[in-house]
Image: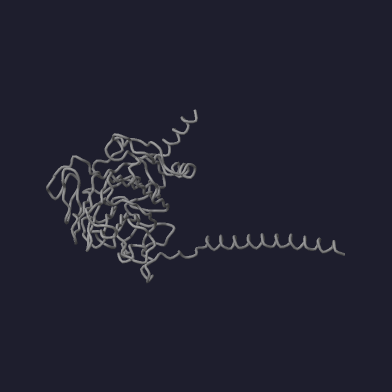
Length: 359
């Protein structure tokens, strides 16, 4: 009985083990609230999840074996650029050579409000510790096929980027590399390579993803303003939480892509598959009436990225105090004063009673 109940919770939560014997990663589970409650209750993820059934897989936004167009500069639904080459087993964004850049971009814009991307990738090379670089970027952006300095793609982008950074350019950093981070941009922010994007990072985690002797996977889920990034890097057939933030606003009609770059140091950066799943999520009538193509990429617990242009550090600053914020601050201050007054009165009265006993 208890086992059956636990199995039910595992299924409801939606994240967990990949299905044994199946290529790649399974499909998405239900909404984020159930997953959050279960994560708080049980901690590590050890659950079976759905098997990526075909009705939720969006093939027009996915790259899956067997690849079509091996040896050409494009395949079905995808364009290649730079040093990218396509073989029968993998798509190599960069070889283990210096000063290379490559990318792959989906032909079609994605108009899904809620989605989940599973990426099977491999980063490997001959370089020893701290003598390799630079890493892979996964994109959901307005512009596509524009080369640039950010892991082989353009800076000041509009949309979402997930960076799998393998080399610490900032010698003073306390972060342990390889490091996965997330950035949301409306075109006004510049990615600072010298600081490994620290000033524009929303969240991140350390991830030992390089030169593994087994398959490595990453999953990105966006639903109802919540962005979740999870990894499977230990060959344990289960997800590990990396990033989980709310308040993210992304428009529809952007393009999925992946890019990589090398500089003085290098690595092979390979993509084996990219699978996009549609999440079946109900929205309110008000949400359905929104023109999702007009939304500006933003995160609501921060000021809009364009408001940070005058900040010399490029760091996010706190937003202005609105009327509601002022009211809440004053209310908290008033409650604090009342509590202190009551405590003080009780303490004073007890001291008075104690002093009377000595007369």
